[in-house]
Amino acid sequence: MANFEIPSIDIRYGQYNGTKTNSYYFWYYLKELYDWREKTGLIPNIKKIDSITIQVDIGTRVEAIKEILLMAAYDYLYTFENEHYVTSVLEYKKDLQVPAILIREPKGDKQRDIFALFNTAAENRKGSLKRYIGESYLVSDIDDVFNIQNEAGTRFFTNTVQGSKKDGLRWIETQTSIYTQNTVRYVQYYNNQTFNINTDTIVEETTETLNEFASIKEELESAGINELLLPIDHIATRIFHQDREDAILEIVKLTHHYPWGAYGIDEMDSSTNPTRNVYHMAEKYSPAKVFTAGNTGDFLQFIAQKPNPTEVFCINFGRSLHHIAYDIKEDEETAPDNHNIDKVINFMTKKGKTSPGGLTGSRAEGLRQIFMKRSELTGWVTEYVERFEGFHGFFTRKNVAFLTEAAGKDEGLRF
Ligand SMILES: [Fe+2]
Image (spheres, rainbow, N blue to C red):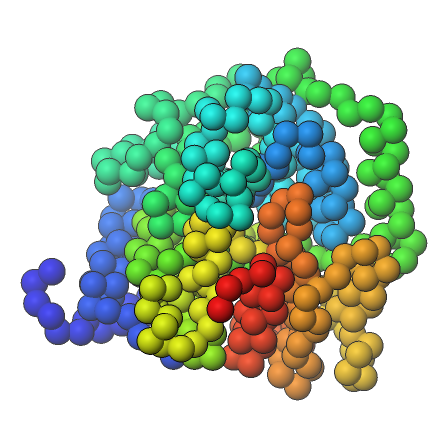
C-alpha cells in the first residue's frame, strides 16, 4: 500500500450500499483483487453456485433430508458414497439451474474429519460432526481456475484436480478458511451439467424411506405450500469482528462475488455484509453470501454494555453458517397476516417447526421475514423471506435487529 489516502470506492459491479465504513486496507485490496480476477480470467470463468454441502452427524442423514424436504421445495434425487462419506443430493426440480443441496454423512472415524477439530473448539458443537461445509462453484475451465488460484497462494486439500471426464465431473476444494471455516469447491461437468456419478457408487435407500420422502412432498403439495417455497436466496455466515474485511476480501478472491454493501446494526452491535454475484443473475441461480460480524470483541462487552449475539455465536458455535434463507413467492394480499409467508409459517408451525421471534416486516417495508428455530439435525437456522413490489434488499434495519435478537434467544446466548 503506497499511501494512506482513502482510495475511491470501486463500484464497477454496482453501487455500494449501507452505513458501515471500511478501512483503507479493504478498498485498496478490493480494487487489486477486482483487477487480478479480470486480468487472469477468473471472471468470467466462475459461473455460479452449483450446490451447497452440509455435513450431518453419523446416523442422522435420512432425518436431515426429511427436515429439508419439509421446509424447502427441494426433491430427493439420489444417494452416492465414496470411501469416507455417504452423500444425498436434493434438487429443485422446477428449475434445475438452481443450486442443489448435498447432505453428507461421514462413514466413521470422527477424529479424521477436519470439522471434528473445529467443533471441539466450539462449546456448543463438541462431539458433533455437523457443519456447513461450503459451496461448489460451477466453472468453465477447472484447470485454469486451479492454476490461477494456485499461483495466487490459495491452499487446496489436494495437489491435483479430482475426478475425471469419464465420470462426468472434475473438482477441487480449498482448505478450510480461517475466517469462515467454510471451503470453496470448484466443479466442472462434462455431460450436460448434472451430477454424473458412477452407478456403482449409488446407495439405494429403503422403500420405506423413499415412501416417507414422497409422503412429505405430497403433504406440501396438497397444502399448497410447495408452490410458495422458492429456492435459496442467501447463505449467511457469522464471523468474528476482526475478520469482517478479510472474510469479504477472501470470497472476492475465490469467487464471482462482490461486496454489495454493509449495514451497521447498533442495537445488536454488529454489521451485516451481503455479497452478490458480479453477473447480476437472480439470487436463486447463485445465492448471495452474507457475512455478519460483531462490532466489538467479546472481551470488551463489559465496557461496551451492548448485546453482541454475533460475537457470542462465534464463541459458542465457531465461525460458521448461521442461516439459509429461502425466498417465498410474492402475493397480492394487503392484510398484514395473510401473506404467503404467513401461510407457510402456519403450515410449518402445525408440523412442529417453530420460530423463536415470529414474523417481522410488511408490504410497506418491502419485505416480510422470519428465522425458524435452529435445527438440531443440520445446525442451521432456516430463514424465509417474502419481498414485495421489486424490493431488492435482504432486510430492513429494523428487521435485522429484531431477527438477530430472536436468533440470540434461540441459541441460549449469554449476555
Ligand atoms: Fe438472512
